[in-house]
Image 1 (tube, helix red, strand yellow):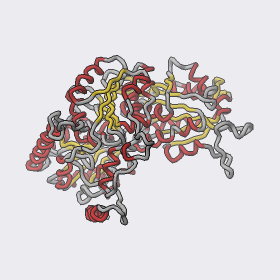
Image 2: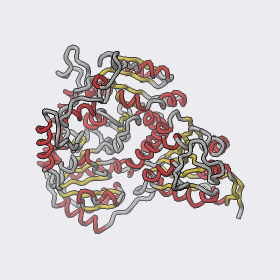
Image 3: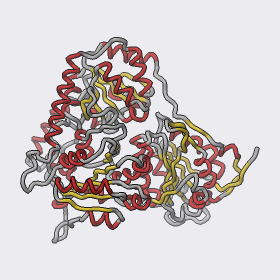
Image 4: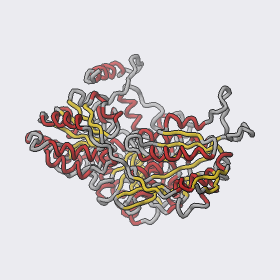
Length: 618
C-alpha cells in the first residue's frame, strides 16, 4: 500500500479537497473554501496546511468567528445543502465564538464543518494560553460545548484518527435526515504531527445525496386520508427546497386543487401569484393561510418541523388530520401525525401516482382563491407609501419599507433576514417570484446573522442581487462581515431599519401585560445625556462600504437605485416606526405571562392567555 507522509492538518486539507458532488450543474467540489481566523491554536497547524492548497481549497479571512460560520451556513443553505464550507478558529474564545453559529446550523439542519483548535494532547505545557481547566476532568476543554450543538463531534488525539473520523463527518454533512454541523476538534500539537497516510484515503471521490424512498404502507395510509378529504391544505417547508421538489409541488397543487401555505424556510417554493398559493402560515402568517388552516379537514405538511410559530403553539390546526411527509423520522410523528417518511419529491410523486382522479372540493379551492385575493388587496394597502398610517410627521412602517424595496427590485433578487420584527413582516408580506429568492434564518432567529448570511448567499449566488433587511439591534450585534464582503468583492445591499432598540420584543413585552422596559433605547438605563444617536451610514462607510441615510420612503426609492448600480456593498439606513406592525394575519403564539403581576393589565392579559390555551390539544 502506497503512503504519503503528511501532518494531520495537511491530510485534512488534502482529504477535503478530494471530495466532490454531482449536482445539476455538474461535478463540483463539495467544499467551496475555508473561512479562517488564525490564532496560536491553529495558525502553525491548519494555517500552514491551507497555505499550500489555495488553488483547490481557498481560504477566506473572517472578522468574527460567529459571523464567518454564519456566512458558511448561509452558503450551504443557498446551495440547498449540496455544497458547503469549513471554518477554523483558534482555541478558547475563537472556538466558543463559533458555538452559537453551530447551534444555528443544528436547529436549521444545515451542514458546516467546524475545525476549532484545542489544548495540547500531550498536556506537557498545560495550562496553555486560553485553556479552560476542569478541576475534576483534564480531558474537558471549551470545545466540549460543541457536543450538544453538533450532529457529529470528534477530538483528534492521534493523527491517524482522521482516517476513521473524516468519512463519518462527510456522511453526516451529506445525510438528508441527519444533516447538520460537524465539529472536528484539533489539539494544536496533533495538528503538526506527521503520519504515513494511505494514498487511497485522498482519492478523488464524487458523492451524491441519497433519496429516502417512501414506505408503501405509509403511502397507502396517506392516500386514503387524502381521498377522504374535502378541504386539504399543504404546508410547504424547507425540505421542499432541499429535495428539489418546488416545481413538483407546484404541479401537484395545480392538478389536485390543493392550496399551499408556506413556512419561513419553505417560502418561495411556489411563486406568490401561483393559483394555489395562500401565503405564510402561523404566527407570522397571512389571513388567507390561517383562515384556511382553521377550516381544513386535512393538513399535508411537507418538509417542515412544524415549530410553534407554524402550528400556533399547537392551537391552529391541532384538530385536523395531519400527514407529515418528511425525510427525518423524528419529524414525521410530531403533533400525532400520520407518518410519511421519505424524500419530499419522491413522496409528492408517489402521492400523484396513487390519487388517480381525486381532487379537492371545487368550493374549497374557490374559497382559497377568494382568501388569497383578499390578502393581496391587504398587501397592496399596507405596503403602499400612501397607507393611512403614513401621516404627517409619522415615521414609515416596516411594511412600507418592504413594499418600496420590492417595487424597486427584480424577480431574481434574494432577500435575507433573521431576527426581530422583519422575519414576521417578510414572511407574510414579501412576494417571492423565483425559487431561492427568500433566505430566512428563523429556526434559531439569531440576531447578527443577517449581514454575514447575506455574504454567504452572495458567494453562493454571485449573479443575483442580495438584499439584507436588518434591524438596528441585529446590525449592532454583529456587522463585521460587512468588511469581509468589501474585502472579497462580494457586493450586498443592506437596508438598516432603525427603530432605536429592540422594538419587536418591546411589543411582546407590552402584549404580555408589561410596561416598556430595557428594550427601546429610550426605556433603558442611560447617562444623563440619554442614549446615543447612532449613525449607521457612517459606521458602514468606516467598514469600507458605500452608504447613505435616507429620511423617508421617497428618498429610499432613489437610494435603492444607487445601491443597485454600485459595484461595492451598499448600506442604506432609515428610521422607522418602533410601534407599528402589520395588524392582520397572525395567529396566537404561546408566551407564558405572569400569574401574579403589579401591572394594571396583568389580570386581563392572564385571562386572555388562559382562554387561548384551551385551543391546544393538551
